[in-house]
Length: 321
Length: 92
Image (cartoon, rainbow over all chains, first blue to last red):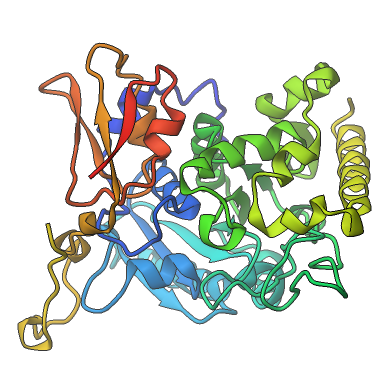
């Protein structure tokens, strides 16, 4: 696998690379996933095929008769992005075997949101990973089914108000914690699993490249703030992706062959815990957590802090820190 | 600038065209537009990388960046993330 030290690039190199996810898509102003996709597409290394499960990014980039993709792109149903990717990979193998492919290697990327991964698509993903198909699965996590009207998903955090977990007098938003999807993928004995955040773009690009270069399945969990569903300022989308890392709500790490290691942006907070910010700073800039700052549900912020700290400690242990 | 839409009569019989979304100009969504202070700008290119709409381009031949207001939706990410505070969002 190529290491970070081997793939050196500057912001200028990346800015000069052609866009493969083009302008003119119908994403909302300040869309986090759109930034994530633009960055991911800058890290591809050669011929690439993308398959996209139903979700915001599928809808906004392929409204007939337009397409925002400058590479071969396939739409698939909500539940089978990984199954589609494994089919593409198998077809490419056969074409190469028969000498009908002019390319030495074609990378396959499966894209899906949190709904299409945490809940609906997990069986297809688990099966494809078990079979060991060579593809990169990118989960852009905007923490709800934003495409269909902000319904809660397995990726929605505790206390978030959504249309199917509305905060009111009875419940304080979603009652369950976020599912640790990346850890579930590590448990599949995958060669490469990582988490990334668009603010740390360099780290994100390197992880995409590593995921493409590894032989076998790779999984990348990318944090992608959604100003529409999170009721946040569109200008703060990237700032939120930084705050999530600084509060350790979304730590950045990678697991190569099951061996966990913290990525540099998160390592800073492991080595200097005093720099770690309280989760309240992250929660208070989002409208979906507004009710947590009323006396009735105040205790929930402490619970979120407790669980965040617990998961962070567990991660540090896994990383041997 | 108004968004350029096609009627069904104008749609190519071949269906979806290569890179066709660039024909759809989303720039009329914006209320605020980014205005750059050339003196403050350090050309760090963070705005180019973070713009969700790909509306800021790096022009190597000019050694400078350019805003494409045809696609800018006025979200303000570029102004918020600019380390030199060289971009200001102004009411259109």
